[in-house]
Length: 192
Image 1 (cartoon, rainbow, N blue to C red):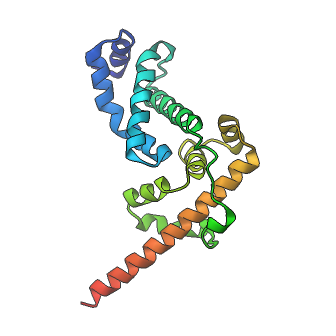
Image 2 (cartoon, one colour):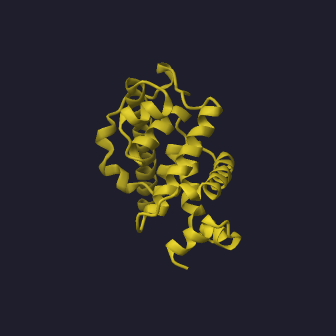
Image 3 (tube, rainbow, N blue to C red):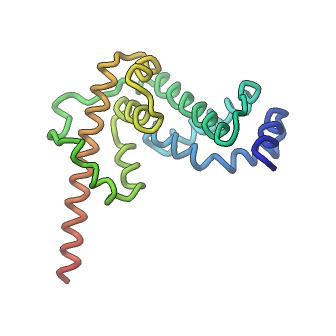
């Protein structure tokens, strides 16, 4: 079944087509939900709610060629995740200044990112405080501006910028620690 046929069958509430759509996209959308929620159980709830919204909203979807379905599904899932975080008071969850790790330059970590497995990096992102994680995800993965983030989350642009900066500091610290531990482990192995 082509993507256009799948969409049309989902519009008609065809259970087989809905199951096929779920099987095709649930994995990547679940990963997106984990990025926003920070934990697997909450991500499952968001994924479930998101698919319910998707299946009841196909009449609002306008197919614009290859890739437009995945983009729409992702947008619905991000909006579902943001709604969940807002409803549960997790959007503005931040650390106090005392809780932020020692300052490191987040820009200096660019080359080091290539040395870290993606699952480790995604775990680091999931460990960020909810507000930081949400802003980081919207800015980095959804490519939203601080103005767009501020509008979505009902915060100021300055707060968005500050939360992104603090998220980067925390991630840079975690990356640095991970690389130091990995390098020490590799030296130990090489010495055997």
